[in-house]
Length: 343
Ligand SMILES: NC(=O)c1ccc[n+]([C@@H]2O[C@H](COP(=O)([O-])OP(=O)(O)OC[C@H]3O[C@@H](n4cnc5c(N)ncnc54)[C@H](OP(=O)(O)O)[C@@H]3O)[C@@H](O)[C@H]2O)c1
Image (cartoon, rainbow, N blue to C red; front, side, top):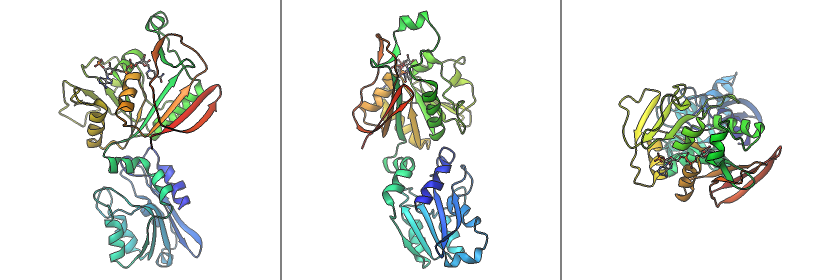
């Protein structure tokens, strides 16, 4: 099962909204096949694992291990449970249940009804951690939320506005290595969110130019439609949702889509609800202070990743305040990266 998790990680960032499942096929204590979920629209892990077995006659005496319950419904691909039954694999070992409303135990039932021996909840904790994004999405009906920011030694997220006016160049708090790590994180998540002021003041691209993989779907808060075509988030290179109170797009196929929200309600909650409807499985929130604090105050976050640089601003915009379980601390050259979990 640990090998399934290891394999599944190969799908991180490319399978959304599907889970990144890993699967291993064993007979006589020997691995005869392995697979993981292909990029969205492609094969599920079990299909790839079965396809990788060169001598298919071995399948009837084999055990298939899979980190998540096999699906039982027709999506972009036929049900994996049917494929396992068709290949006469008699023993199935499953890491954790799939809460997706179209599966939710039906995959296991289908296998048992066909006479298969099914073992469930093997290394369940590790498999649930591996599938944390997918499970949060289906169980809590919102994306898995990672908060990320960088603060100075004296606790500022941005320098004083007057100082910025005098010097329009970006004021970096962290070093290049930390910033590259952030691009890696972006490639791992389904979507990225920033507030209006961050777009207007920093004009970020929110992409993965210092890493490889997919750039996440961009989500910007723009209540009064202040962001204009000159801003990088409107370059059309990546699907972008504009959360506002004025207009709704009529064509959801366009790369820039306007979604209307009620800004009088709890905004973090509103955002979670609309992103759930848009099938966004995970979200990295990268600022600014007001946007991050909205998610903290609404207790709508799962992880926080906070860099502390080695410099001081003395005056400026204070970093958000967070309480959670400290999970790890590491040095990235002179920066300190502290992570928190909200559990
Ligand atoms: N160090 C870092 O890691 C980091 C990261 C990102 C940004 N920053 C810095 O942070 C600064 C911007 O931070 P900020 O706090 O001023 O702005 P922000 O969070 O980027 O944007 C705030 C704006 O977004 C809208 N908004 C966000 N949350 C809202 C809510 N809960 N309810 C209603 N509207 C909401 C509002 O726009 P309206 O006023 O139009 O309604 C609000 O003024 C920039 O200087 C940027 O450089 C630093």
